[in-house]
Image 1: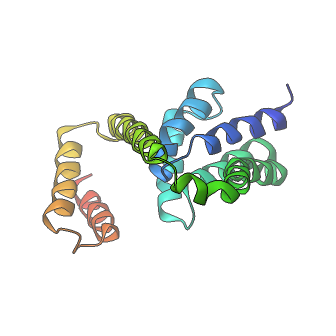
Image 2: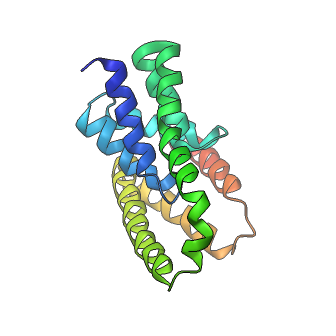
Length: 176
């Protein structure tokens, strides 16, 4: 199968499974690009995620653009970006006319959504575990991660997450 078709199929699969937002796409990207296709190494994926977090736009789109460009230049970037968006556009186009009817249904849609949320939670926990295992290499790393996490919890959303990231960066400059 030609590379461009593989690229499109891989990112359509990622886009199809991205119900729940950006963090959910991390294990999907890891599975498809690192394990299945071996287009990226685990460390490279971590770098892409770090860049995707600090640039505007969803993680999946940024990862698609980067990976597509890396594999096939501008045409690959355009194709991968379009492919990751396509499943959502198709699903919304098909489901929108029936959405109000589903809402009035006997509660089955709510039950399906509740089940999907549990599946999304499992993907987020997997992403935390796999990304954390790659990022935390020492007790110092663990201590900084725990302090950042506690800072978010203790501040009760008063401290912006960007501030936590910047503080960790400054602390990392001195510690590492």
